[in-house]
Image (cartoon, rainbow, N blue to C red):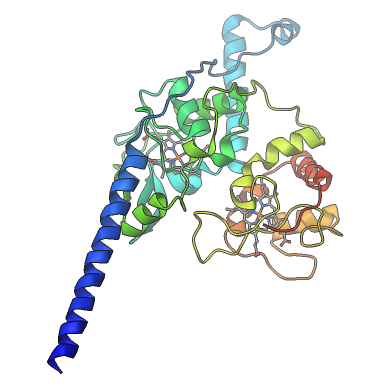
Length: 322
Ligand code: HEC
Ligand code: HEC
């Protein structure tokens, strides 16, 4: 009997040591990954984007009027982008005063910081270059990689980011302190194992120029490809879907959006629009999380945007899922 206890005791001890060893390794490795500083370019562009000289002439505007109209348009475009495409509010809160991305032990507490000018806000001293780094590169102002997923924002043009900055500069101040990101043991393990790939590491070249303007808002493949930039974080860069890397394990795998028989082959535009707006597939089944998080944004898309997306998806080569 005694030997049995001894063996069991030794086994427990071995397991504890092994667990402790794995934890120390994961912790040290995750810390190394998160504490690196990354180099990137330092861009600058106007906020808001000015009107074209021709238009100022045609409308006969004074410089002050031209500036006011440029700001008004930038804010309108910024609001549309935040309501229909870029889900900053999902993690930074509906009032942008801070919100929750993940708050689940043992993964960790990943809160979206306060983006207003109120107490606890982090963007008061942000330059245009800082905005570019965090949004389009996943790099914080101090050069360290952020845990914020920026993959979906890589195709954003200067003008679109400028419109979003113009919007945030005037959003009502919210006083809210948001705790910094802390990773739990599982979060550290996933980062250490490379299961959670930081956005900054997705991007190979942090010095490549960004487009200045988005493609014209018309029903073209080019505009559709631009819009689909926000679908690739879940549906994969080739849009053939599969398991969502780094996502909640309970989430459904992302659907194949190419015209393959595993994907959207045989779908009409109306089928596509119904699933985007009503969460219902042609066979009557309903889409699940996290696609349902996209619906409120899709409902604010213009018809031109929805049609351009469809045209682009139809132009893709058919690929099997995953
Ligand atoms: C899926 C959740 C998520 C989405 C969507 C998201 N963010 Fe974040 N964001 C975060 C998290 C989490 C952090 C904290 C990152 C860190 O400290 O590593 C963050 C950090 C930031 C910061 C502050 C970085 C700092 O510490 O100075 C800014 C600015 C920011 N996000 C802007 C945006 C904008 C603009 C958008 C929309 C275009 C956006 N975020 C979309 C989760 C998100
Ligand atoms: C947050 C992750 C996420 C984002 C972002 C996302 N999707 Fe999805 N999408 C999913 C998942 C997961 C499914 C599968 C849902 C299910 O099986 O119930 C899905 C399903 C779909 C479907 C239904 C197809 C089918 O065969 O069931 C369409 C169409 C679709 N997505 C289009 C888009 C488009 C277009 C975008 C970008 C504008 C987008 N999705 C952005 C996760 C996402």
